Amino acid sequence: MPDVADKSTLEPHHIRSLALAGAVIGVVLLPIAAAQANPTGSGSGSGASASASQSAAPVTPTPTAAQPLGDEFCGTTTSTGTGSAAVLAQSCVEQSDGTVAAKVYVSNGSAVDRTVTLNLTRTDGTLVQVQCTIAAGNTSASCETAALPTTTGTGAFNAIAELTLADQPVADGVLHAESGLVSPSAGTAAETGASQ
Image 1 (cartoon, helix red, strand yellow):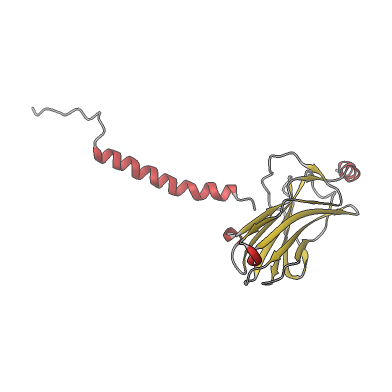
Image 2 (cartoon, one colour):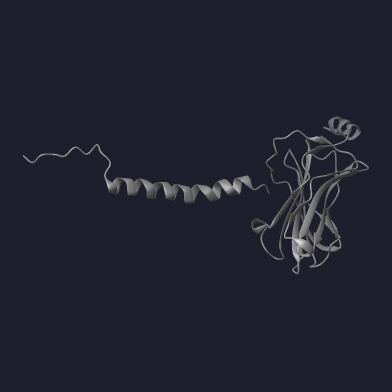
């Protein structure tokens, strides 16, 4: 009877198989993780053309404490590019007369048109979205969602803007600007609680 070799050790072809299996798992899981990490409605634009849609799709809340909302609460200005060809954006949540809207201020110093997708989200999943085209060279454009009554839904608000090259999907975004979570003002929050 022939001797049976001990197969408990790893041979080179086992290591290659394990490495290949690990690479396949990475290729499959990386796009799923990236899609879940990228957070995803009617309005008008100033200095921009707009097309709008409204949806109640769930939105993943950002796990940070909300700031109190005054008349306007803006996040930091984000930019891409340098010098006069830079593209800058700042997202804001605005409150007026019991309503809230998202607004983004854009400076498009580049030589190409940009599309901005602006979302006003609420931590309960409420979503209002608008898309605007910002013309090349327009350094003082803005885009704004339709106003949403503060009594619609519950939780904090966030304005999220994604800028892309014109006619490109949001997934190809070249600039992301966010206001950060903000809560309705004290008077409005009391009205929201009373209406539910």
